[in-house]
Amino acid sequence: MTTIAALLLTLSMGQTVDPYVRSRVEAGDRSTQCLFWTVPRITWNQSTLGNPGTQPAGSEFEAVRRSFQSWQDVFSSCGNITFEEGPRVADRDVGYVSKGENRNLVLFRTRQCTVGSVVPAEDPCWEDDVCGNVYDCWSNGNETIAVTLTTYDENTGIIYDSDIELNAVVFSFTTADGPRCTPPLTQGCVATDIQNTMTHEIGHLVGLDHTDAPNSTMNPRAPPGETSKRTIDAGSRAFVCESYPKGGVSQNCLHLTTDPTLGRKAAGASAGGCASAGAEAWLPALAGWALLRARRRKEPRA
Image (tube, rainbow, N blue to C red):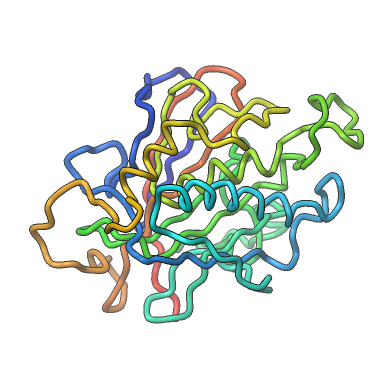
């Protein structure tokens, strides 16, 4: 089952202003377990396709790399995880494959999953919520910049896999250090900054939720031209030091009283169906904000 936490342009529901907020098995429910990694090394991969529309051309790969390095610097200081970049891959599928090969993938989607012209209306991928993988298209809202899809054990909160999709259908991604872009897009200006976006999304990957704390990397507001989230704030740094202590074990939030499992068996799912959830999405700040949570089932792929 996949939980989409998406921000919509509507009235604010008053998010927390805590220095950091840990992601939970049930988003926002502090009675449920926190999400966290227990492995000492996380290998991540970029899609070979990159994003053809990035300005300057081809600079997206290094921008993504810098984002992971920013988190690595924090973990090297006080944490217990090493990030390792794997080779670029042709894989365009996100999500978790039970008992199969999995990778923590970063990719850009460059076309919308439009009904009819891209995805037939009768295609069963709509019901299974896998059209993005089947047709290599963006299946989330046009207003969403990026989505992080995290698969975890719903009893223990232990994370097994996390993928990041960026919406290159609607947003013009840049890597420059110049002024905010104004139409038409020109070389050297900042529209939607890749490093700004990715540093935020990697925060979700390691188990952080949104906070309204000013200047936080995990603040969901991202106006065009913003680059401040490239620098990881003190609250997010404290999360690493406290949740992933250097030389120690990763910290959960609740004492485990149930046996680990890959989740409830959804109707129609084969044995070993996984609880796949925690997709975090964030948007540019244009108006008020609200948090919408929706659920969708994603079957394990053979």
